Amino acid sequence: MPYELLGPEHLGVNDDVSQSTAVQVMSGRAKAGSHRHERDDDYSLALAIEGGGTAGIVTAGMCVAMEALGLIETVDKIYGTSAGALDGVYTASGQAAVGTTNYKDLMVNPAFFSRKRLFLPGRSAADFDYLINDRIAQQNPIDLEALNEGPEFAAVSVNLNTMAAEVLEDFSDHSDRLEAIRASCSMPVLSGRKPFTYRGRPMTDGAMLSSVPVPEALAGGATHVLALRSRGANYRKGPYSQREIRFTRYYAQMGAKLAALMVGRPDTYNRAAEQLQHGELPNVTQLVPEADEPVAQFEESMLNAHYGFKLGALAVAKAFGVPEQLSVSWVLPPDNAPSIAVVT
Image (tube, rainbow, N blue to C red; front, side):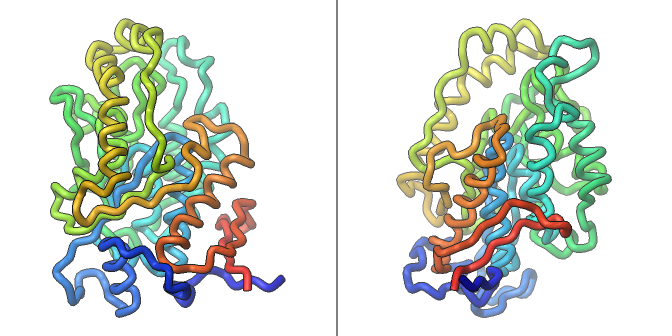
């Protein structure tokens, strides 16, 4: 059976293209060959990328498919929360496919995550020094020249002094940008007893208040937002256990504030999910995988990760009129890129 690598020529091949305004703006810009900073419309289009730990491989699949279709050129700004910030920065630099390789390494790597370290002095279960300084800075470096030419990028974190979600942008240099991503990803307790400090402010995982950073994109001036979801449309978050909340309150510095965020997070998440599912926000569209939770937050199965990646790519194909007979591979070849091909 012959295959063709997914490319811009497959955009809109099927007539069944989503009629949502965000998809229509992106499709129109792509067909017109619109270039960033030289638009012939008055729109500002943003991606808002959900995190979710290793579930971010789902949104990574969406980003890789959009990159292959030439759709990232239609995007003006990318907002990412937690793992969505990781997906976002690699997508903004034209390296969405490269960014997926981080998941393959981190999923089963005790150098990054091990609960056994939780009670070791000066250690954390999730080692973000390894993620930022080894994986990203050394093994999978971001193309800074391409990043400067790509969509603007911002990470969303939570400021524990103000107990509010905060958009981190206007970076002084690349190190500052990487620190912002780390602030966005820093999980309560699992990232250490002491909250990560960014520009002198104690920060925690942006997902505690804004898992899908649509409000931040709208507040930043976006007229249209495409929300990339790592969870299905019907997924709703259940409460943390009382044991987890008590442990956080007494174990971590600023634990009372972190515990309060944990108590409120399910309602915050679920209200946002309702808004997105029912289209309550004008010019905001969500792309979702067909399964509610295809990949766990701390996934250990490569099979599940591949499934989630494929569902992400298929969600893009469905929205943009691409034939859904896709061959999606996350078995990475030597060039460190997954492959998405159309079955012809």
